[in-house]
Length: 265
Image (tube, rainbow, N blue to C red):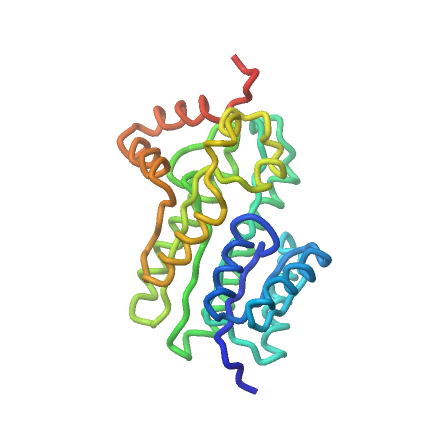
């Protein structure tokens, strides 16, 4: 049975930028498939989003596990759902000097930030290419534009996401499917807490953090305009411009000074 509204599939939809994006799509009449590990939060957010008059399907999956990414899309196919929009928002960081951080956490981080994204995008494309339409929004970061001492693996994963997004956008240019990368800077979400990054200089002044709502609005508008990418916020545009003008060594040093612990000399 055909649904009256197109579906948007959004990972990491229960908090932060993903939550604000899901709300934005609901406000604009999209039915939602929202994905998160937290079953209780999913149920609460689903009820909230339904208040906008749209259908909401909450699916609890652990996207750190490759097989759960495949099973997510299999569940959609079994229910005859072909999302027209894919938002790859779910992602995490891990703070600390690389020689001291937990390799198991870092492998998990790579699985979530990269592997789950490319699997889900591959399945989405196989579904949507015969239909000749679709939109993909990938959460990159201004971290993708500079090396990131104290947060090195996260920066590396986001550099991959940006480069890969731009590559497949070119491949898909005549397909009816668009790819947009959203590059936020430091944002007022639970990201820094989960990454163990609260002692970093970059989050020392909470007033300097962007709001997740503003970032989501930038991402939504860029996606609907079929833009290739959007750097959210004037300050972040300046940060990226400075990185582009710097050598990699200079950019790495500047980022190290921004991200090192507050009590580090």
